[in-house]
Amino acid sequence: MTVRAQDACETGVLYVAGGADYVDLAIQSARSLRAQDPDIAIDLVTDLPENLPRDLFDRVTACPDMHPREKLRAMSATRFQRTLYVDCDTLFVAPLGDLFAVLDRFECALTHDVRRDWALIQEGRDHQTPYAFPQHNSGVFLYRRSEPMWAFLAEWADRFFADDAIERDQIILKDLLWESDLRFYVLPPEFNLRRVTVLDAWEPLDARPTILHSHRFQDHMRAKDGQAAERISTLETLLAVERVALAQEWDAALPEQAQRWAHLRK
Image (tube, rainbow, N blue to C red; front, side, top):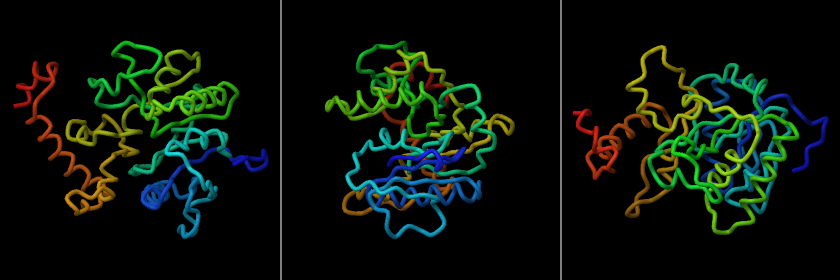
């Protein structure tokens, strides 16, 4: 996965997909990206480089022995000067526009994680940070090639792979962002839209939804009672499913903080 200087490209999008199911999701996501930004460079790192659609990915890098968090190694092997790494369970619903221009000022940019009133999202390994500094979601990660950024990526990977007790890379990422002097920017949620039901509350000029990122795009991969769920591949279907799930969430047992104002939703 070594990148020669002459192979470097200015901007591009990077996927890392291990196994047939995730390669299939990466194809779905990349097709949605290509529909919005036909000329953007798209690279894929995968353990299954065969039988990919022609002309979808500009470069495919074979990685036979992939770790579930192989992205931590692949991110620094990018050939791009400015890279947008995205998880496979994403969907592009608008052009990226001038997103890469954020890197004129910052080394990297990413969004806060959702479900922040949850111990899982507040968890760090070496630091207990304030509630207002939760984990950041690493599934949409914009970054530029620089010495500080590459040192950060190396430290992130080193710490994660050295600790077998850590399963989620966001835990180490949270610690590093808290410690580091790296200039990073928190993107608005439309570039990593994890909770699409916010579309029901947004006014027309509030935002331009751009990148959807949902574990529900994986629902068809997980058989329940021997029967797989229907595949979700559009914003319309995702929004319908999320509306039902949201209603069920509020009808279930609520944490103390939510109980204080849940009645206002009636």
